[in-house]
Amino acid sequence: MTTKKNTKYIFITGGVVSSLGKGIAAASIGMLLKSRGLKVTIIKFDPYINVDPGTLSPFQHGEVFVTDDGAETDLDLGHYERFLDQNMGRVNNSTTGQIYETVITKERRGDYLGKTVQVIPHITNEIKRRIRQAAQEPKVFDIVIVEIGGTVGDIESQPFLEAIRQLALELGAENAIDIHLTLVPYIKASGELKTKPTQHSVMKLREIGIQPDILLCRTEHHLSAELRAKIGLFCNVPPEAVIQALDVNSIYEVPLAFRSEGLDDLVLRKLQLTNGEPDLEKWHELVEKIKQPAKNGKVINIAMCGKYIGLHDSYKSIIESFNHAGAQNNVHVKLKWVSSENIELNGADKYLQNIDGLLIPGGFGERGIEGKISAIQYAREKGIPFFGICLGLQCAVIEFARHACGLADANSLEFAPDSCTPLIDLMEEQKSIRSLGGTMRLGCMPCILKKGTLAYKIYGKDRIAERHRHRYEVNNEYLQTLQEHGMVFSGVNPDIDLVEMIELKEHPWFVGCQFHPEFKSRALKAHPLFREFVAAAIDFRKDKTSKKE
Image (cartoon, rainbow, N blue to C red; front, side, top):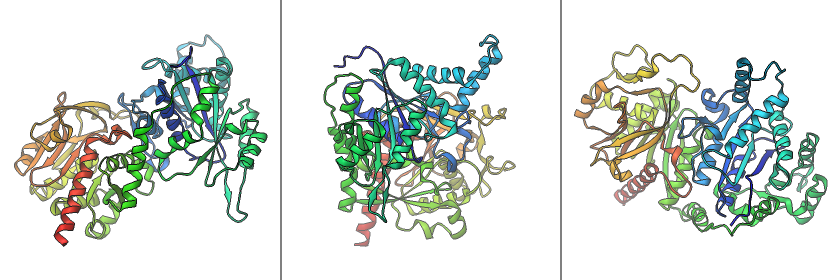
């Protein structure tokens, strides 16, 4: 067992370029330490001035990940939850906007007793307070991993770097370490790996008083002992602390790669902790299940029809949910990215032939809506497994109302504010809201499932709780009409009597949910809706193949 006396801290920074994978690195280190019996949490600091990413375009920042407590957070929190198999919350993500908002509120209240409010100490103190708070909520943790967003050298990141410099000094060398993720690029023309970017990145860190204890060197090629010694010499770290972060095919291979490099052992030694060996058997099995089906040709094709397909990170949790579900079903899920606007222009048949399932994800706004509705009609009429999430459910209701119930002008008030047939209406509590940030229906809400339905069969229980992020809901005035034509409302919120899940009687697998199940899928525990959607797609492909034969 651990011999620790205090919570230990691991600070993770990034250099040279952005998008090196600090979030995956933090999640992987956390998973390895947790597998050795330590209680681990992770906190992410984002340097932008937005209070949260909730009002950012997915093209700007990728997916907004929603936690149980309703926080709209950075997508890295999704990696933390999936790798550690534990819930994160509001305390695990802070932005420059939140920190300045807190400090300014205190100043207006008179908390600083007439002092001049400055970046040092007031902003840095608030950052440190939040780091210490994360160590205590919702329980006391052995290890707190702190990921600093952005790249060393960015002006936005400087207060955070100064804060962790101060905190490391206060905690002492045995209680805090700095890990720096950097890039060792390969120059194809000369056939060489270059260490100079890493040297300069560490030099920048040392200028502000941070000496990395460990370097994670992202690279396309293996680092020789000679190269590690050179990096160690110029960056003032021992060669054994120069860790190779080699590119891998799946993010779930990263913890195993770090383990083979001895990273977790090194971290424990530097933090003066002694723990047992990690149990990674199930993780090895997961990686094999992800890799093997593709090699063996066990593939299904799922169409992802949305309007943010130009940046796949906009749907990061959905992508990973399919990886989990594919592994559990021993199949490789190949995603076909389809622009709903292209369907509007050219029709669904051109893009949806030869698919085994259709998923319509969440989203906002009118652009591409008619393409999504056309895609749903195509899947419904051809018996293709369909899964609609949030806006996907709403589009499914509109499509069914138009083409199965005879309500030709059915629409949503989000897209057609003057619609005389509003199948989708603004929620009652949303009608008086004018501010956009943090005001949607957010977080984990209960849902009662109707016995005898597909939804009940999938979950195996009648009461569930899932995460939400929306303002609009199915209009209850039209439920009877929809039911009379074969739509089943298989899940309902017990508190406000709103539709949470739909399905169709005369379709092999047609499910929509108002919530976001992708936020609760875990690496070793696929979400049941994704698991069964993939299973339905496998069956559909088998039937299709047998008919051809």
